[in-house]
Structures are given as structure tokens and as C-alpha cells.
Length: 486
Image 1: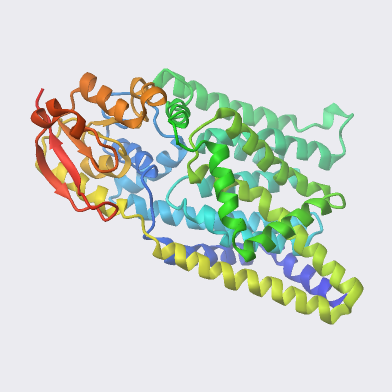
Image 2: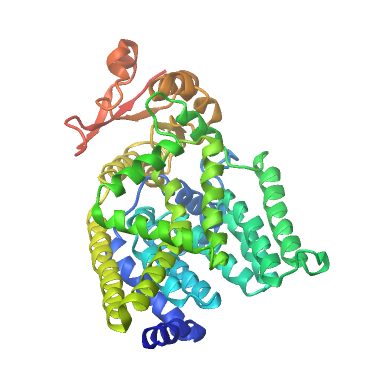
């Protein structure tokens, strides 16, 4: 009984809001201290929306062209004041991500206390905060979106209709796939209230506010951009058709396979399987787990390209299952081995989780994507050596476009849907040829060794001479900037 009472007292600290949020802030700042240098290309698209809005060009990527090419409009709006004040947008985005991630762990702790599974909530929070995959998405909207999803579940479990509806609506503005949390949270409120047959007690206020906020966002997008959804969805679907390119299902399988080669992750997933079986006794945890299943099915049906940040939110289902698995093991140890054995087991599981995953977090912080440096150097060269209206084509336009601040032509199709249409049939090289022919960019940034283009086009070699090279540690050949004359 002592161990259970200790866990209950520890879990009940979440009832002290100031203490709980201070603890979460400390954890978030600790993550930021390790991860502040990380980043990757895609979030820089949203950063440029923020800087253009702050500069008075509107919420657009290329000034004068209204195209919704960010999947995180709310994140861009949040970062716009940061850009206006002259603060480093990528660094602040990393800070927001780390603090949000710690808040997401706190939400799991709250759910465990709410549902009488304090140990499950604590262990779920530990795994959630320190599991490596979501941390690799720092700087993007992924971790804030995950946190919003979990806090909408907390509010739903507490029966707070207006706040639940608000968080559900805002999560869709943050990421369109946030719409998946709505049915789950509303169903949770119905079940929690025991109101299956009493439709008058259903969460109508939460549902109404959710629908109003989502509809307002869709309507605003339609008025400004002519479409309610980002054009990037079509581009990512076309990328998935490129031969040899991973789709979501492929990426999920590869990610699981890589983790399951390591003994510790075998234990983690084994405990998660045990926890899944334990939901028979604690069915409320099926809501976040069910959300993860729904999320995975949605992305599988959409058949988008398999980028790592699409897989990361599945942790919302894995963490509670792991927590329930740990709780089940400790209960077994206490039942069959007594208090001492249960205490030893708890120390081993908690200490092992913190020690191993803390090391993993540190290693992630040391693994800096070389494109951050290479693409920034290319963007800064363009900003200095090209006229402001020079049109630049590149395969990855996030970092380059953010630092160049030039009109961009995206060969991956995230800005121009007609370029994306070329991807499914001919891949990136065919899309590049199309972009050069129909958009006539003034400059081309290209890694010829990775994707041979000019070596097969003597006309382009003559038309587009080399004007700069950037050392690229990924390949023996440098990243090359060409100036094209049409």
C-alpha cells in the first residue's frame, strides 16, 4: 500500500497548478537548452509567412501571390510578432516547441490523475517528454499541435465544454489534421457524463464552438487563397507517387523496425502491448490511443509522402499504453512479490526510462542537420548578390527562401501546384525541367550529384552558368547556384 500511496501523492501534485506548470516549464527549458540548435527545412516555410506578415506583405510566401503553402497558419501568426520585434524566429519556434512538449507531458499526468491511474499518467508523461522522435521535429508546429490535442482531451475529461470546443477549433488552425481530435474529445465527454441516451446532456456547446472556429478558418482561407486547405497536401500526395519514395505507411514501418532492433525499445513496445490489454480495466485511455489509430488511418488513406514528422504524433497513443503497461507490471510485482519487489521494479523502470532517454535527448541535440548551414549560406549569398525581384528555383525552399527573401519557385511543388503535378510521373528531375521551362527562374540552386539535371541538358549548361558554390558536407560536390538567362 505504501508504494500506491506514494504514487497517489506524487500524482496529486498536478492539482497544484502553479507547481505543476513550473515543473513543466523547467522541463521545457531543459529540452530547449539541449535542442535549441536543431531544425529542418519545412518549418522555415512557415517562418517566411510570419516574416512577410510582419513586414507588411500579408500572410503569403511570395509577396503578391496568395497561396496557402503552410500547414500551420496559426503557428505562423503566433511567430509574426516575433519577426516584427526582430527576434530570431527559428530560435523562438524551438523554444515554443520545447515548452509545448513539456506541457503535453503534463496533460498526460493530469489524465492519469483524473482517471485514477497516477502511475500510468506519470510514466506516460515521462515517455512522452523524452521519446526521441517528436523531439526531432522541434521548430515546427508538430509538438504544439500534439500538446493542444492532449489538453483538449484533459478539458473534455473535466467536462469543460467551452474550453474543449475552443482548443479543438484552435488545433485545426494550427494543423488541419487537428480536426481528428474533435470527434474523439466529444465522444469522451459523452461517455464521461454517462449521457448516451440523454441527447440533451451531450456536449452541444463544445461541438458548436468547435464547428464555428473551424468554419471561420475555412472561410477565411477560401476568401484569401481561393481554397480552404493548403496546396501542400496535393504536393505531398504527388511526392508519394515518386518511385522509391516512402509513403506514410512505409515510413511508419521503417521507423518501427529501426526502434525494434534495439532492446530498450523492445521493452517499451512490449509494455505498451501489455498496457493496451490493460485498457479493459481502464477504458478511458482508449481515447488517446484511439486518436492515434484514427490519425494513422487518416494519413494512410491520404497517401502522403512519408516524412518523419508525420509519424511523431502517434506517440500520443504509445505513451499511455506504455504507462498502463508499467502500472500493470508494478501491480503484479506487488501482488506476487510484495512491497520490496514492487519498489525495486518501479525504481528500475523509472530510473531506466529517465537515464536512457535523457541520453537519447542529448544525442539528438548533437545531431544537427547540415542543410541548416549549407542552405543558410546559399540563401544569404542570394540575399547579397541578387536583385530583390530575382526569381530563384530550388528543390527545398524553406531555409534558402527564408534567408534569401527572394521570389521562390519550389521544385518540390509546395508553392506551385502545377509543378507538383509533374512529380508523380517523372520525379524531381522532371519537375525541375518543367519549372525551368515554364517559370524561367533567374537563379537555380541545385545539388547536381544528388539529382543529375544539367549534366543531361547541354542547353541548360550553356544557359545557366555557375555563379557560386557552397561546400556541402553531404556530398563530394558542392551545392551550386546557377544564373539563368532566358
